Image 1: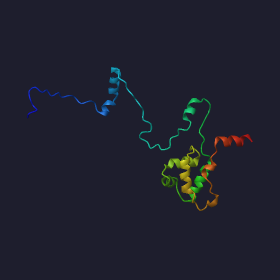
Image 2: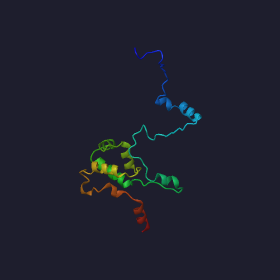
Image 3: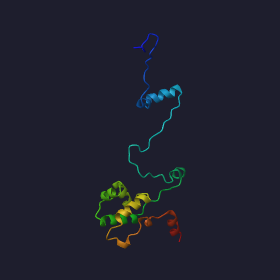
Image 4: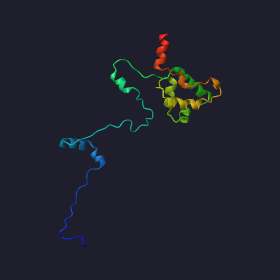
Length: 157
């Protein structure tokens, strides 16, 4: 009771906006009207499980006007993956589960639509390499990839 004397004034103030209210469109517009600095940033792939982003030469592709594209996995690689997977008796989903990837990734590699990723190719190779029918025939999947320098040297001869 000693703290409650007549000379002391207690001021009750309204709490500031919560994080959700501060991010609202109204709050942003009000801050802009007041002339305050407002920093905005867009989240990229926030609600998705994007593990292997394709960032290779994207700035170069944006700057160039001529037709440029990323090298894709050859159909030979797709066939080797498909044959090895089938010889093990695995479906695309089973192989994807075994290597901790999405089934769509396996489908892209088998159809030749995927951009080569050495980590994914290594995991596929380790999962399939023990296939009994392939035996000593099995070579590293990445040897089937055509790099731009190889394709130029073979076409020039």
